[in-house]
View 1 (tube, rainbow, N blue to C red):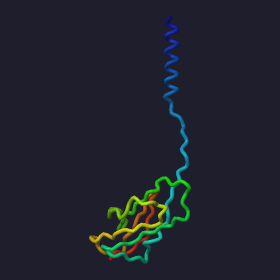
View 2: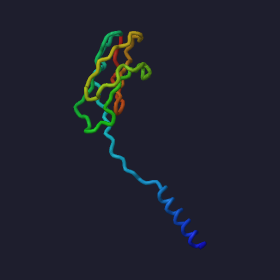
View 3: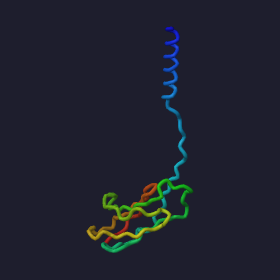
View 4: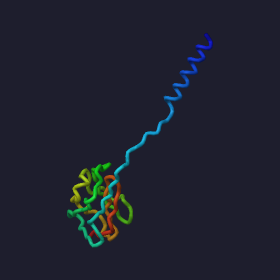
Length: 128
């Protein structure tokens, strides 16, 4: 009787430890796409309060984009805390129109950051 209970308990413990063991689950390769920003570029001048266009290269998207929904942020001097200029657009569109905030101080060290799968930063440009 004791041997049966012991064997049952041992078998139960063994099965429990096997089912609780971690398993290696392979993940598929993630297709990260960080398209090059075409505009604004170093020659671009945006005017506060007016509309402007951000464009990027869509010539080589992967077959499966991890996050196809884009967002454009404004940065100044490397600080990305200047707000969201656009969001909710398809990265495959290749462009989005934005309104340049009217309360910005003029400067030549602004950049836009394009997010979707990955972040990509434009060259510095001017806002007047």
